[in-house]
Length: 275
Image (cartoon, rainbow, N blue to C red; front, side, top):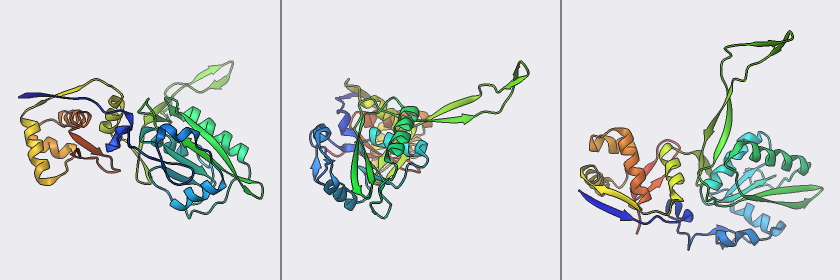
């Protein structure tokens, strides 16, 4: 059994995107590094160019701010991945409709981000006038060093006890919050698995990652040599090990830059890292 060590990549290396060469869509529609993105101005011409490109990994359209507690999933997914832009006032058909009551829409969404996103997320807001007293809101979300970020959702639990104060009914405090993390995959924001959340959490650690190459790792490499991809359940079956051990092993190998993780709505897949 051998010990191996590998330095971690920085935050922008998530899913194989290197920090030095990673790119981000700027206002003119060209590519721009995230570190320079904050200084990029936004105008109607740039807005039209972004809309023309359509939704993707870095871009999401919403026509209105209905259900802002759901829209924050996109914000969290951008922060957990490589950043992105959320355009409010744009239809799925790429029509630029704008918002008539832009102050109200901005207030609702900023309040939702403050209330439902944890930890706090760094973003900026632009208003783009499009005529006829309508504006498009552009929320620019930056890649975060504080990942993973979560959407907080309140869940009501069954009432057990009741309290009466001066003959006035006071309901018990029986609501709890659940946390769900999201990541951006293509043009969708999907819920992150435990493995994905653990990778996000530990990616910011600059320490070298050490792992032992033993029998289970040998079986994993043999499988990947033949089939190119593996899931947690497949690895557990192949190596005849408990699922939680298979999960932790795959996470460790991703952190050591031996494997890459590919998040999916159904089940995450792991492949050999590209060198």
